[in-house]
Length: 174
Figure 1 (cartoon, rainbow, N blue to C red):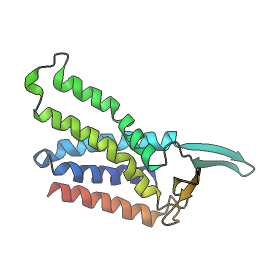
Figure 2 (figure 1 turned 45 degrees about the vertical axis):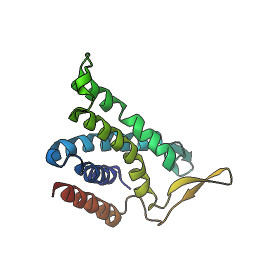
Figure 3 (figure 1 turned 90 degrees about the horizontal axis):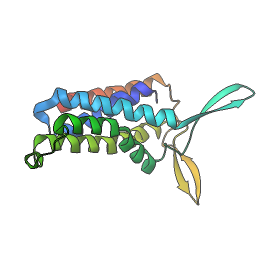
Figure 4 (figure 1 turned 90 degrees about the vertical axis):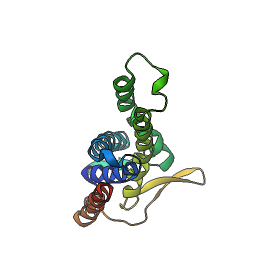
């Protein structure tokens, strides 16, 4: 799928998950989820693709470095580290006090961690429908697995995923 499709779909999924805990802070949650989605999906796609030169030119290939489900979780958590550190500095500053232990700030930090865990598998969920799929380990070797074999730039499938992402954002708003 196109990167913008990943952004919208992941933002919708993360916002829908977070709305159960932070329904009264919808716009704050939407912005936070959008930032996590852009950073996480960009990291997974930038690190997880390599270009191979052939006689027909350059071909972009996915690698098992980021396009497996367990590794996508790890890359999702790595992608939120800058946000996590900024939130810790913003909420706690340089002085940590005991009364912060069960405050709303800890819920924001835990939600950010949850978003980091979910952003990677949401990327894999969309990539499993493309022709190149994702990687699974079978008999000790990395094999590609795809549920459907749509091209990554298929406008109908990308549009459908974007619409589903927008619907999830709308459901989170309700």
